[in-house]
Image 1: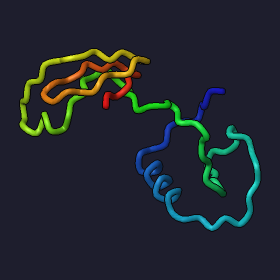
Image 2: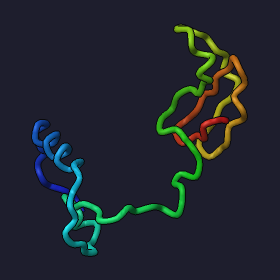
Image 3: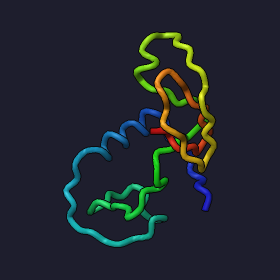
Image 4: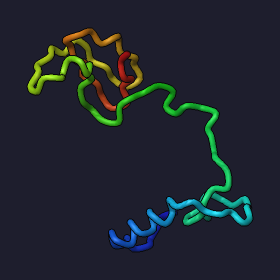
Length: 108
């Protein structure tokens, strides 16, 4: 189902965002399809029984580093491992970086 409504001007979108983040007094609740839920407020929290994804992973290609190793601007670290999607990385050793690809599991 394609949404064909025009985009909101930025000021209108921000106003709706602020209005939607204010506490609401729920006067009655009903069950509806998610397709009909636009503009609605949940009457109760919804929690997933599963963690998706099941581990911390990356949303884009990049490098994993230890915070302690990059306290100095311009630090150069050798790449000690490559972490493709679906493969758990090994513990990141001090003074090294890992090349991590989209969907790769963040190393411990």
